[in-house]
Length: 64
Ligand SMILES: [Zn+2]
Image (cartoon, rainbow, N blue to C red; front, side):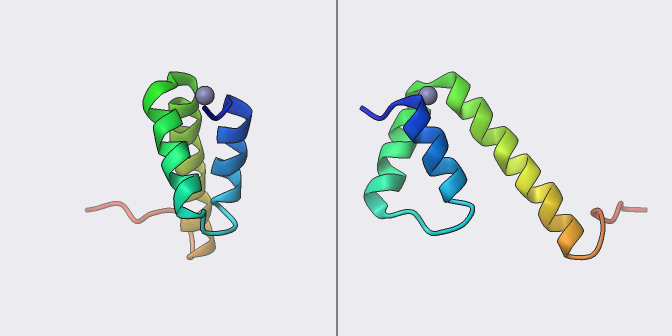
């Protein structure tokens, strides 16, 4: 079983490269069983979305 440390390492590496299928699989498995890592993963996705929206030209447009 992957440790939390390994799982967080894979999550941050996934920002920079495509994970191998077996890395994705073990990460998914870990996230399915580990709530703290799930939360971390969610936060990371949120940060990623925010920083991406800035690099694409500012915060998301609001509907009027
Ligand atoms: Zn964990």
